[in-house]
Image (tube, rainbow, N blue to C red; front, side):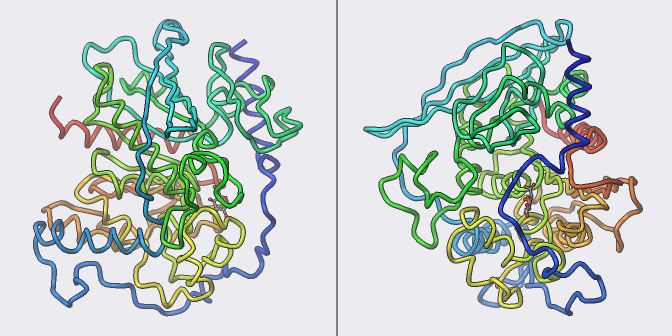
Length: 431
Ligand code: GTR
């Protein structure tokens, strides 16, 4: 059975260029030539709005960090509207005997409600059975449903919107049994469990279906007003729901809530970065091929542009962000400052060499230019002048980086680097 799923998963991985019919983009207009990168000045990381130089971690934490956080919130990801959403959590053990008895799989049903409406979302948990202490845990959204990441019949199918995908047997916008396990190539559960970590994942569409519906569905339906131009888009919505997951982690004794690693691929890597910025309870943050609006510098104007992303995905950021369409030079911030918001926590940025759309060099440069924030804590950030060679991770500081061979994807190679980086840094936190 397992082998059948692995084979299917591999096949789907090879076919993955077909997987997500999405708004078409005029990919020829954004620049993909290094020689055409304009000269630009990066907004200063360690100078406050009033011109004050930031020389200590105290000034960073009290002055500059809050200033930058507010800027990203107001101009890009959007503020969470005030709300009194109740969150109720119910656990169910799917099996305590998967992977030859190595892991317990649980489903945790989150019910978000206001007085009149509710929304349910399922967190899928894999916990190592051989630990005597609470498990450090990776937390990341998945694109296609919890049932696609691991081939076990006990995992429920989402009953919300899914992007139609005939390759996965989804002939309409609902999940299909045929797609069980098809994304397991992105989630090496066995390696994660063998290394003593837990894994928690949720289908992002449970929180907010990923299409522009003018904020009618998902968690937005529980808010009486539509977001105004400085309020949240979907990325901030997904990040918000993950904070509720961390609240839940704080109530369980099987998970070490001081060792939660938020991670994500691509749009969900952008989500992980924003989640890590707004919620300092995450011990480590991982951006896998997050590109434009994630780790990549916008002012390089390389690969996906702000105009391209806002046109194809008008629901991801807030409306204020539209003012920078084709106006990257006017941005009062850039993505190195987003990376710096993780300081002093370890952050890992991963690129793929074939992923020009995400601008691997721009992702590297963000890490490099976030380094001064780490130095305020006496820590190394990403202290190398140039991108390291392909498949040679630079992980000696608190900002890890690699550029992997291959295309836009989340691979076992990427995971191995994250596990190593987590081993290196999470031991610094006492059990
Ligand atoms: C692309 C989008 C990117 C990235 C990617 C993904 O279409 O242009 O910003 O987020 O999707 O999430 O796979």
